[in-house]
Image 1: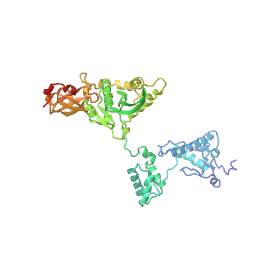
Image 2: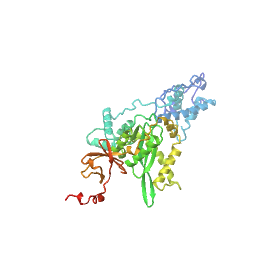
Image 3: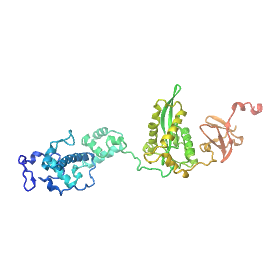
Image 4: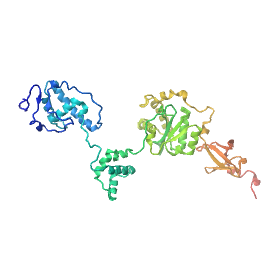
Amino acid sequence: MLEALGLWWPSRRLIIPESVRPGWGHRGAGPIPHKGVIYPRAERSQGALHMNEPNSNPNPHSQKTALTRFRALNFIEDLLRRGGLLIQALLEASRQPWPDENGDYYAVRTLEDWWYAYKKGGFNALLPANRSDQGHNRVLDPATATWVVEQVTQTPDIPVKVLYGHWLEQGRRLPSLSVIYRHLRRQGLDRASLRAGRLESGPTKAFEAPQVNDLWMVDFSPGPTLRVGDKSLPTHLCVLIDDHSRLLPFASYYPQANTEAFHHALKEGLLRRGLPRKLYTDQGKPFVNAHTRLVCAQLAIRLLHCKPYHSWSKGKIERMIFSIQSGFESTLRLEGNQAHDLEGLNLKLSVWIQTVYHRRVHSSTHESPEVRFQRAAKTLRYLDATEDVERLFYIHLYRTVRKNGTVRLEGQLYEVPLSLRALKVQLRLDPFTRLRIEVWHQNKFIGLARKAPLHLNSETGGEQAYDR
């Protein structure tokens, strides 16, 4: 059989004649040069596998190629363990496609190169060698390549094809568009990468507040639309989350995403879970107005805002909203679990938060939010029991008292003591209800303003109350 193959066996070493080798081809040969000798298994005992060095070629395609080669070598090794000869194993492996029936066939010479490369250098020796000019373009010179990157970086919203046509109209000498595309792809500036935010300045590091109530985050999100009678009622979800424990101090649905809704949620949250030291919000109107800044200052809360269009900087609250949408709002579509009004919707949300979310082990902290929060219960800050919480949410407005002892507020006249005529006073009130309007002058409480009874005033005092 060996003579038919053109092989001969002198003193336990198998030599492959040159007349046979060219017919085997050299398809897909690895980086290790061919030695021209196939040793029987008995003489390869000293060629034990070397420990692999760290992989210096992280290219997934290169690793896939190396795994295909490794599979073929496993097949050869199995045949050798059954007592076969190496040449027979190589011939058998060359008759099969790798890694499966849809793969490629490899020549005996190629498989032999892989075998000795693997015995000498381990798995890493099966990785395809990198090109010596990898990362360098033979058509695009360095100066032009740098200029193209600068232009694309400055105008990432304009398609490269449009920019390329504009450059040619300006008389710029450039290689083909495909060369430009390949260069930008290597630089990570292809269209898909740009859309994914390649040039945006995202967060530099992941973070977590060191203590409970060190940092709260808040945000609004559109909620489910309720059917109330013959009308549709859109809702808006307001969520507060503690950064350290992932506990929700408060969450509720409101008819509108405005300052009134945010202040109500904040008030309920601090009454239930204590005072945070910092509050992190986006640039929405409910969070950046003067009233909100005043409320946070009176509560000794530092108000922080993220940059516009930087939603990743408050990823925890965004992920929490997604959890509510997928874990709670999705259940409202089940038969018998629909909410018919805003009060019923908020009741269902509260039950879900207390019985499901707060008791569920969080994937990031490996603890339930309730357990992680309660561990720091002794260190939490709470409002003084004697403090009137409602007054801490008052807005402060300045008005000059008219000669008739009134001030105008939202188009309505309110009476104040006549002793304050022509003086500038401060009004402290809840702007959403205006049930109590305090009048202050020089940091002293003077009294309460009341709505001017215009019709009653016209009948008081008789004729003596009017000038003739």
